[in-house]
Amino acid sequence: MGSGRDKRKKAKPKAPGAGAEKTTRKTERNEGKAVKRAAQAAKGGDDDIDALLAQFALEEKAKSGADVREDVAAPSARVYASFTAHPTSGDIYLFGGEYFDGAADKQYTYADLYRYQTSRNKWSRVIAPKGPALRTSHQAAIIKQYLYVFGGELTSLNQSSFKHYRDLWRLDLESLQWEQLTSKGGPIARSGHRMVADKHSLILFGGFHDDGTGDAK
Picture 1 (cartoon, rainbow, N blue to C red):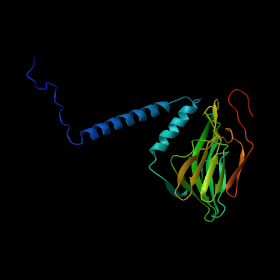
Picture 2: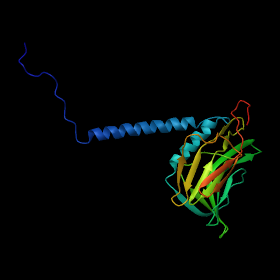
Picture 3: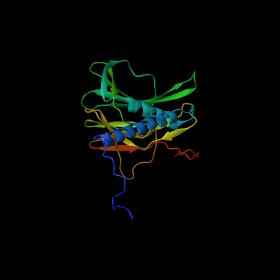
Picture 4: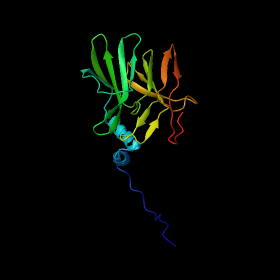
């Protein structure tokens, strides 16, 4: 028999803050791995829509916060952007759209936001992170201080693949904060539709949807 002493090893007391430091290091390592995975996902071919969205997510994450850059050059050439007039301020908001570069045979889709001040004949670039992804042929409308964006589509650089959206977003034009609005049901994914504001409601009509099987609606 033993001497009766507890032969188990005594736990060494942890230094103050050691647990928090370990957790911080682990979190930093995980974040670094996540960044590497996102960067790898962003490397894709001209037909890779997931790569386009991954690259967009990286660029959004790099933005430090909301900002308005006054008196900038007009937006680049594009079609199928939304161009929405504010009912009281006289400002017009341009969002998204697409541009086809015939020389390179590539189509580029945007998710940038501009404000045109009719009273000054000046453009401003509105930086509002964490908003809708790259899209074209969507629709937008303004109710009170909110800009609403619904649907649209994204096409790969070589136009061989595409994605339709059915998400609804709103931007607070005062705080410049985006919010995705979720609800049960609602319209199916589509582009080329029409949407208008009626008092406190949005009215949506028509549009186009292709699920990739050739069954276009």
